[in-house]
Image 1 (tube, rainbow, N blue to C red):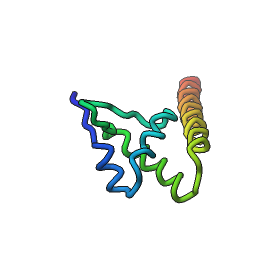
Image 2: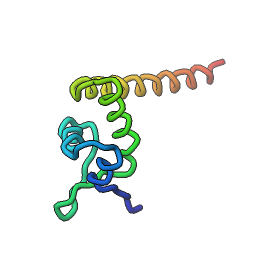
Image 3: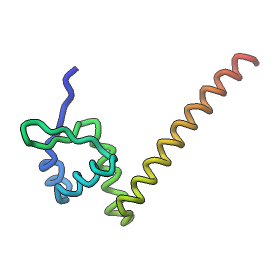
Image 4: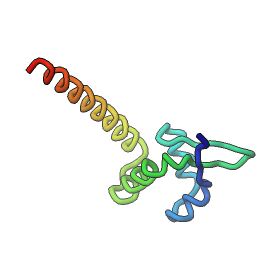
Length: 95
């Protein structure tokens, strides 16, 4: 399956931000960036995540360090929620 990408410059233009912001997100490990022939791309499946981060940064004025912490905590919560669901399913077997 071929993965689809969007030019970082196109993403930044459409959201009225500088390209260095996306590169900072990449440096913090918040989004993936693909380089092909000296051109930077954002994988399409990263768009919702990048837009969510952009909203946290612009609307709530949260810095990148704070966004990194929030993202890490949300991943942990999602993992814990999945564990809870699995444990509930196991308990249902014994009812």
